[in-house]
Length: 68
Ligand SMILES: [Zn+2]
Ligand SMILES: [Zn+2]
Image (cartoon, rainbow, N blue to C red):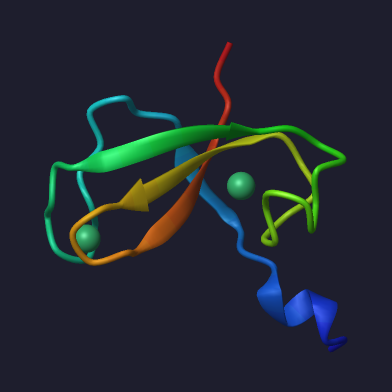
């Protein structure tokens, strides 16, 4: 496994605007839209379009699939 691959997170679920944090149950979850090609500029996790969720309470991050 390369150094870079150790940072890759998987997209684990479909985008849910009402999602709560799976770690602490917090509802203060922010959403950012990450585009392919932005790897290492704004997102270090995966070079693929996704919704980037961030829990403001415990700082847990996870990735969601963009649903059209
Ligand atoms: Zn991201
Ligand atoms: Zn949390």
